[in-house]
Amino acid sequence: MKKFRDILPGFIIAAIAACQYIYYQEMVELFGGNIMAMLSIRLIIASLPYLLFAKRIQFIKFAKSTLALCLVQPGINLITQTYAARISDVSLIAYVTALGPIITHIIARIMIKEKASKKFLAFLALSIAGSIVAVYNGESSGKASFAAVCLTLASLVCRGIYSSLAREEAKRAKPYEVAAFQCFFGAVAYSCAALFTGQFRALPEIAASLGLKGILWLLYLSLISISSSYILNNILLNQVSASMGGVMANATFLFTLAVAVFVRGERVGWHTYVGSIALIIGIFGASLSKEGSSA
Image (cartoon, rainbow, N blue to C red; front, side, top):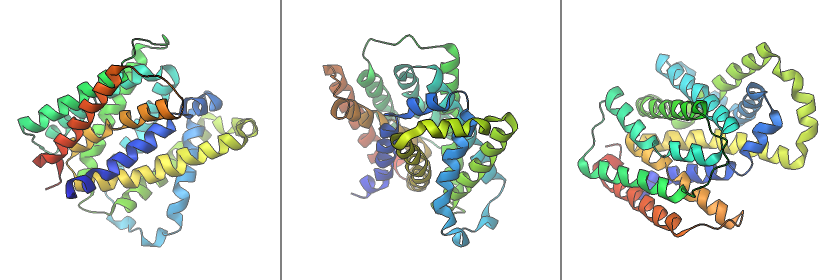
């Protein structure tokens, strides 16, 4: 039961990420080329809850490693992820993203000397294979490019670096403190970038075209997708190894498929069920190994 409690934040993050894909590309297209402005607004909104208990956040704890963590996420990772979503279709991103666990594990071995047993690596491989099989549909919109692949891979590398940095940061600060610093840093950094590039000038026109649906999704993409997810991710990486955190990231595929079937009414083939079962076995098998905890 404790093993499941340790990885539960990962499942919640996966569900949040899957739901954001319902409207994410539409939001990106709504902001057009003003990506810096969009990220700035999202992170400003995401920072607001932390202002309520700012006195409890001990900023004196933070060091160069915290700044490095913020440069990775919400820095490079968030922007590469957003641009990849803008220039490519979801299926391409899904295939490349499935490789995330092995990239995270390799980086963890290099940065924090994290080791893994053959049993863990076998379940890690099963989770990757299950993800690829589950999302395979033999179709593509043709909206694919080498740049999109490179951006997605860059995002995965950043995620891997972040996992290792967050594991170390958990020894010095509480999850909500790190999350607050991430949001504040991102809000300032992207606001400066948006001001420098003049992207804020387009905000009145964008705001007028949002509508109630757009406003609600913007709040979701800010307060839930960023603010809540950052806290949950830091809690997860405080309880499991960086490599296990990488495996949990692929749980997003399960919830994405659930959204496709139950929300959008899409039909899926037998391979989706086979892949999903393999992914579930891979996740729980990896969590039950010694690498599945922070010990």
